[in-house]
Length: 377
Image (cartoon, rainbow, N blue to C red; front, side):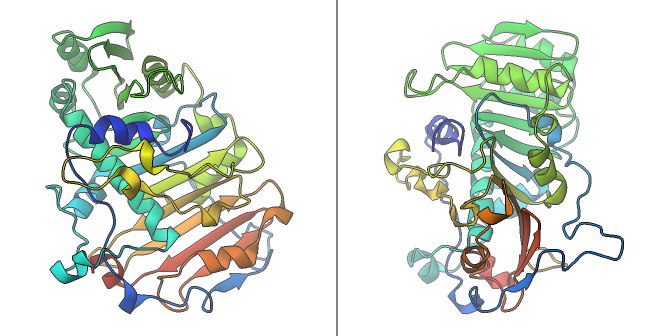
């Protein structure tokens, strides 16, 4: 994907540390539902109540919204993972919770349902974001001044990495002053620094710790990490707009989608996402020593065909409930919705009869429930 989509820069810059992560889970053959024959569809307007409320409900903006700065780019990609979910997925020590036994792992089978695959990509990238921060000089500054004790969210928005939490801003300023970073911006409520030796820009407010790297491909995509970090810290304190403040459709995705657990979102200012909006070319990723290539970050774009944007969500196995996935999509017009194709594409590994597709004009919501074994095996 290009610089506006799934962040290959995050993988290139962070996987370059030599740390190996393999995304995904093993086989879920025994628990697959019939994604083609067991989808329940709500026709347009069918789920309206007597007062004409929309079939797809909306709620509050998510807690990580302040990390989603507006961008001049046409496409907007972001993922978000709350830290509690992150450590559940990776057992807190980098070992994936959702692995099968040795024989199953060797089979190399992974989830194929896009309702699962795409949010799991968000988990992987989020974990790599934390690893990359931890192995940078600024990582110790982040850790010392995080007042939330490991709570919060990891967010990656286009090519910028953010940890949303509660920070001692004055402490960050003092600690960054002790490192070999150039001070680019220092205001009462935000700061930006740059390390020319690594190409890393770092920024902070009382609620965000932000970093981004220069492209390892030279000036190929003209990405400026300093400008990107400045954009996010400025937006967090109200000096620039947040993305949802500039586009009603993007705001609808945030309000209509479920935003706990693992969150994955693609959006375009155009009427439809470009055909290459989820492309990840194998040669754009470097393999780590003894590990797999970055193609573990593959995105399944089938649900996004014809859509202006979509937001996916996955709640992983908990003690109280089974895995639950949902997605909301917005279209430039109703005639762009191919309902039959969408029904065929999603919920292919869900429990039989659990997948629902609800239309509300030019907007769609999908839900599905999964057996625990779908993610554990």
